[in-house]
Length: 440
Image 1 (cartoon, rainbow, N blue to C red):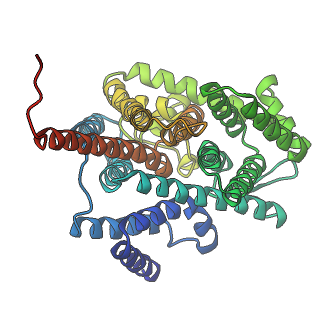
Image 2: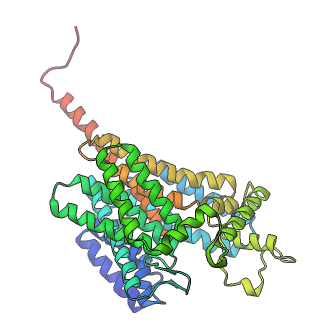
Image 3: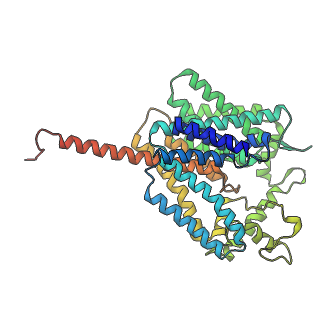
């Protein structure tokens, strides 16, 4: 309770001083919360939620929240409604209620960001807070390496996991910082800023290597490829070679051995990770095909999986040996479709698609060709990396994912505000003209 009180009070004070900086520090807190939890432990699980409540309360009192589009509100309400209907006909309504509440935190985060960020400057500030949190995550991975305090440490493999308790989740987050750093590197002519970007990139890449995540490696390759294909140049090619050289020189031999398992399909040391994930996704597809309309209810993938794979088990009943086992589809799209049905799944995808669309629309309106990549496109690539990672990670409840989605709709809010201001300016100029414009 003391930690909650301190967190609540600190963020209220910050929000009173500067709303958007308090919002940025909240994002930083959400990204780095896993590090705090490793040191503080039990009792700190919900600190980001109370920090967000403090910021939201001040924003509403000071009327700093406005401008959310009706389309976004309708989409979020429709998505929650579909999840609620699925829960009524699902396996366990208790599990569904808890799951809907967890998802609702992410949806509320999207609405907060979409209505609180009002200018290009504020949006850029949010990216800096994101980068600060991600670079801290890279440093924490290096700390685990130097102190031999890996999250996963066996005689066969050692893997860091700073930002989250899972190395794959941490790698997914670190990858998002790569395109954003690329934007800041070319958007500034200041040598100190460029050097800071290079240092930050090195820390992110080192963190990705130390997680030993195969998905993180593939997501990084995808993001780099997208950046290069957007505007191919010899300069980008050289940067890609430098990053590749960084990996070759610094990545230990065990890292490349692990990456090679994606090619051979054979795990090291009799591991069952690849085979287990393949089975989970195969059964997940069967669960969806058996319940295509309403799904098995939010949060009930584990129950449905056990009903299929444990002889004699029944939906809603788990064996004691599996009570604490975390069974997920390792594919956030498949898991959401299996739990919420096809309509809920389509609405879920629409949220991501519209968010990316707003990022791209933001860049088109600014028409900034001075840099190799626009701010909106860099954020779209960052979010695209997380969405790609969702093909092999169950990350639909991740607060950082919904932060990126919220920034997309915030970019849309900023764009709409610019359009409205331009229309008013044009109307004002027309009204103030000394004589009406006519044509012969």
